[in-house]
Length: 549
Image (cartoon, rainbow, N blue to C red):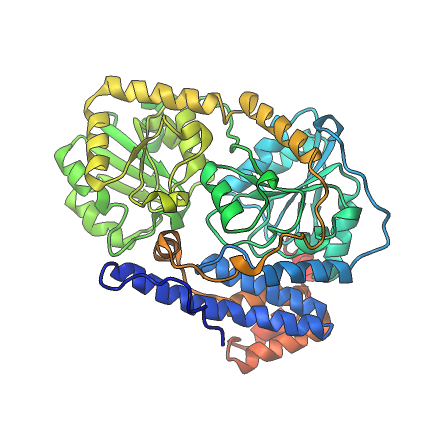
């Protein structure tokens, strides 16, 4: 069993009890993370490549869900390169484009798309905005339908949609197929989940595949792939810091590209939107839009609780939170303000709520930058709460076009004072709304964003091809840290482990003997509820996806 190095600093319990508790959980998380890492190394040495890949994926899933004090791991990265070498074909070397002008066909690779969330929208917007190129999309482990808006953007671009897990074979068969597909393109952009090993094994040997760029969309989480590809694309400044300082990526390979959002076409007036949503016409409407996890309750304080006193002082104001869901622990706060806090489920198209709003309020404890940008496009002033020190600024707003226009409060009082001023001063609302709109137009909307993209492609084309594995791959980033960033990260975003569920998700992509062995392991561990569940796990994933995409 792994124990963190004794030299790793642990917070003083006399000065920071929460940090001490978080540090203890980080240590425990790291021990659990180390188990599948060790198992992957044993399996790789034994030549059981498919099962080694599964354990690498499970280890990454643990570290992405419960913070382990690390953002990368050199052992896992080296195994990705070893697996890539072990599954290599005899394709000749490829020469990538020498400039952005040489990039004509782009392959976007994602694990899975969804009807809610900024990542899926970014792929579609990227493809639509980059109208002079062909943009295609390959999905490695898609479950369910692909959003229509995304498929239409790919079709309009002249590209194709590929789904690996509907083709006969195992995860390593899909690795080989992905390489073959990718060689028809000039450039590959990865938009993958933190634990998706398929593209990383496919592209870890760079000499026979096009240049690969890794989109760092999960910048606050552990993810695999920091050693794979030509460069990492960061969406904001704080992400660049972690990419270089905690993932070991060379500064010249850490590039910046703002998030792209659509140019807003308002369909309704504020009054019409409120009528469509059955919301009151009078009063000041504050709106927040994000995925449910971004409104996590911290130390017993809900997102709703943070607005109770404000709403008591301003009886004509109310708050609608799209994405909060049922939020049962919000009821006391709702009752305290006569229902003027309204939590709603996640919505694939929240545009009507933006059209109805007077003020946009960011999610907390973790920001929702895409929603802020979209809100700015509708002419709304932006407010965000950031109570952490600068070391943990990854949990705050530091996105290019939002820095300055967003009113960022650093205390609960400053947050309430800022919202009070916006509620009571229409001229201030209008002034800050104009600033937010200009910031987004000049950076994040397509006309301006395309300039960033061309610069990114030009820089990437001029970077030398990376080695496999990179010479700079260092174990110094493997030791867990217990600083402000790490303890706050665990405190805010730690969730329950689901190792058994991660194994179950991967098992159907294994070869038959390995599937039987893995199901037997879960049966012995008591992780399988019934013979029917065991039987379902033995059905290959490609068969399931053909029957029910």
